[in-house]
Structures are given as C-alpha cells and as structure tokens.
Length: 413
Image 1: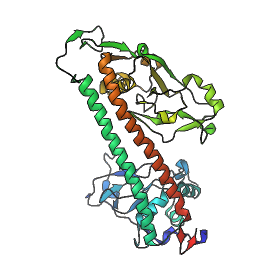
Image 2 (image 1 turned 180 degrees about the horizontal axis):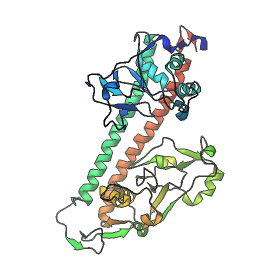
Image 3 (image 1 turned 45 degrees about the vertical axis):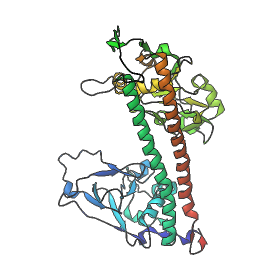
C-alpha cells in the first residue's frame, strides 16, 4: 500500500560544515555508479575553505544536471572518516539511525525508480536541478530497524562477493601480465637455459631469439574487420536477441557484460560478415577506449560487433589467441598502437591497415602453444568470475526492486 510510504524529510537533515581550517584534504566527487571518487576538478587557486565536509555515514549528492542525466549522483560515505566536496553539493545525514538505517536509504537511492522520480521533479532550469525540498518530499517504505538490517545484510553479502570476484580477477590480470613479461620480454620462459639472438631487419625489433620470427597480424589472421550500428541506433536495440558488442564492453584482458546490446535476427543478418566466433580477439579502434583488447567470451555468442570494435581472428593452425591479446596489451604494443608522442598526445582511432601491418614477435611453435594452453585455463576462470558477477548483479537489482514490496506494520506495500 502506497499510503504506508513515509516522506524522506522526516528522517534526514542537512549538514553544512565547511572546510574552514583546511583540515580535510581529500576532494571527492560522485560518479554515475553512485560512488565517491577522486574529483577531476581543477582546484588550482581555489579557496578550499568554502568546500563542504562530508563525515562518515553522511550523504552527499550533486543537485545539478539531474534533468539532463536522468539520475541523481548520490552516495553514502563509508570508506573514509571525512572528505570534502564541492560547495554546490548537498550534504545531509540521517537524524536517528534507530529509525532509518543509512545503508538502507542508500539502497533505496540505487533503485531505477528513485532516479526516475528525481528526474520527474527537477526544476525548469537549463541544467534541470533538484532541490532539497523536492528531495525531502520523496517517499519510501520504512520497515522496522530489524527488517532494515536484515535487508542490508543480504545486500552486503552479495556485494562483498562481487567485490571479492573483482579483486581476484585483478590478481589474475597481474598474473597474466607477469607471465607474459617473464616469458617474452625477460626471456625467462620454461626450460630456459640460454638464448641466442639473431639480427632482425625490422625497425621495431633489432634482434630476436633464434627460432623466433617477426610477423604482421595480417599474416597471422584469417579475418580483421569491424562492423556497424544497425539503422535506428539504440532505438532498435532489443531486451534479448543477438549480442552486439560495443567499445564499452571491451577492456584489456576482460569483457564486460554490462550494457551489452542486443539486436534481432533481421539486423544481425545485415552484419553477418562480422559474426563472432570462439577465440576471436576484440580490439577497440576509436575514442577514449582505443586499443583496449580482449578475447571474446563464448557466453555472448551468437554475436556481432559495431563500427567501434575490430575483430582479429587468428588462423586456426596458429592457435595463439591469448598470446596475441597479451602482446597487444603489453606496454610496448600500446605505445605503438596509440602512437604516443613526446608530448604525450595519443591517436584516437586505429584503422584496419594499422592492425594488418602491426608487427609482433612470434615465438617457437612449442613455446607459444605451451603459453596459450596455460593462459586458456586462467582466462576461462576469469570469464567464470565475470559471468558469476553478472548473475550477482542481477540478483542485487532484484533485491533492490523487492524493497518496494516489503511489509510495514504487517501491510504489504
């Protein structure tokens, strides 16, 4: 019953503490994931004494651009004792934590319906601001404090598992990088005794180990090419269907299932020439994510790619997809792909010919197959962690959705 909802203003109060003594030095902002993050603002010459202080268990939100972005950047501070935020932010605290648990309120603020309500009540300014009065008028169910703690505990169990998987995945990334560096940069590969070098005609590699070769990706691959966005763009994306990989899905060593788009059979047929296969390599070729690279996970197949992602398909007889990924993700390859200059500027696009002509070292067949076999085990485990996190995130969304149906004083809402 909606009548059992309570106005938020009954439980919260504004906090307006300024950093007058400059005792707080950590400046934070809030990202679209509703988390505190290091601020990217240029504060040279800024009077930080006017900035607002956020203490642990207090909230802050940015009231600007809610109308434009259709979401309210809000977060609860748990990771630090104190931080400072822009004077434009609104800072508040829960009045009585025995009536409303801050973590429970933050869960409510993560619901898509919360953002839709905030967007609906923005003012008429160009930026679409969100006032404190409008925030206080928002409503939410407030069950007993025991029930709130139970809900938060369930949420944190899932959230902690997600964080654990992310940390483990990062360690696996480090392991992959370390093994690649030891084997193919430091030349401390298995059965290492002595390496004889031979001169190379390449301008990129002056000398290489005996038995190795320098080869372009075009010679190693049976396919290199990018796709396109179906006519109509995002408006024609489906809830389910054939996966459409975009640049925001491709990260170094990892594929992100978040925001994976889907298209229907008719749209997919138009992109049949960029149909993904097992062990294909994905590389971003435009924008700020240019040169990020990973192996396609089998869980997204059947799939296509859009114009911002290039398929690199090694020949079957070569059997080195993981070696190629590790090579492309190495610092040397990144520098060559991005065309780093002395001034630090980078290119914002990679062409098909850039990929085809890109040179990498090709170790002996025995060594590269041994490396690829070891990496396939690690990458399989990494993929399992990513898929597991996708299911856990779905479970979090379900838990957040179910808050609206909890019982207050014996009444289902």
